[in-house]
Image (cartoon, rainbow, N blue to C red; front, side, top):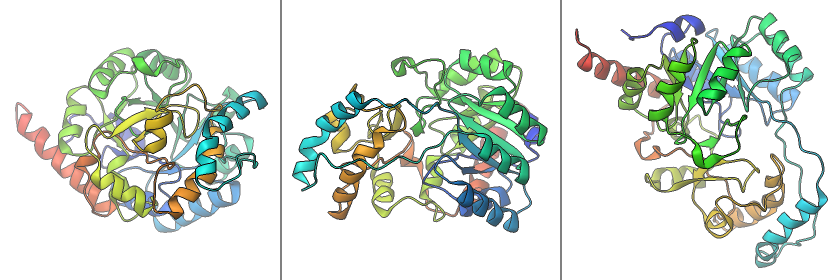
Length: 360
């Protein structure tokens, strides 16, 4: 038995494990398998247009009637800044020349869109059981429509202050994102990445700060981590990197190989690939330019200037300019299907929780 059923009852799931939404790295196949196993599968929509979003949700609904989570970003698109664009391009110009590219060529657009009225209309049409947000919450009017559609709302907090803010503004449960987590930090009340707490320190402080269920995230990849999260007061966990090893993952072979070879000290927080801090496996551009730098343009535009470099290097079999998102516990990954992984994680956690229970 799980020691805390609040998240299970809130989300109507059997296993308190949320497969993390990973933009560009997972789609409907992973969502279906994680949800079919009794967890909560998550579809990331920040990089999907309306047609693709509808198509993916349609596939999911055809394959499972279990609850699902649909995830969105809530960032504010930046104003044009030609001077900063030029600074960033100049910083990368030597790499362009090295790879035989034109440093003055126009950078491609970056397709990370914030939650808006069009996306909200699809939510109201499809009515997924859960909606999660990253970088805070959307405008109140949009949030009201999401709530009216019957969706349970989750969002990420990286500090106790962010958690309190989320609860005060209508969040039904809060994801406590420790600094070990792969991908983008969900920071929205602070920009100081150097003070971000790890999962072990963050979870109990957020548990003490709010009354809604707390979901631990960051560096959790096996039953030991899940059991520890419950001991800290969490009602469930969100796991991302472990699911990148599954066959349902959309990561490239190059990314998959890097994950298999990663050790505990192989990742760093970097703002080079998007303009905001995100954890990934170290590579050439992170070592030589960052990993944190003042040069990149604002989120999410920084990746545009890197895109030609990424394509050219990957054609040569190199990941020098590729974002290899990963948390700090990649070494604990296992190559099994998403459904089996969900069940194995749950069984391992229950075994360990039973062993430490006073009545176990």
